[in-house]
Length: 175
Image: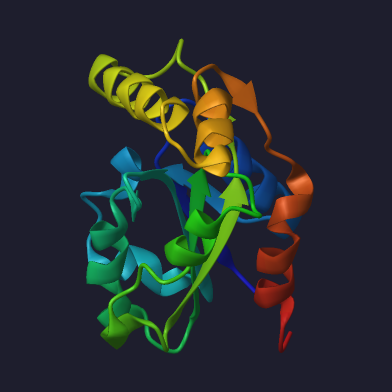
């Protein structure tokens, strides 16, 4: 099966996951900015297409770019991979798996991979937003929220190649 992995990454966690996925599936790998201008026929050569993006404020960045392609890609294996700072056990992760509009849910499967935060690589607006968010969580009356605030107040890396295993199983089904 010929596979394409397209990603967008702000601080490197999504790029790392995209590279791991492409390596394990022998997929073609492209940064989103390198394929944004390609016409629809570019995607015709692929049996499976994986879009990987980073999470921001409960959304998958540039997801609409991928979803705009879905009508042309029906009948292929389509996956969206959300890479975020929340640990897999977080309730936020369950919400991320429901990010697709109803009309796309039967065609695209969503996966989540925990990544981390790298304040050194983050753009200033994102950095300021995250620091303010962490501060508000640390002042919460809820203990779990305070713990999350302490976690996201500094850079950390909780990414692991094993988190791509569900996606790899999905891609290999029926082959």
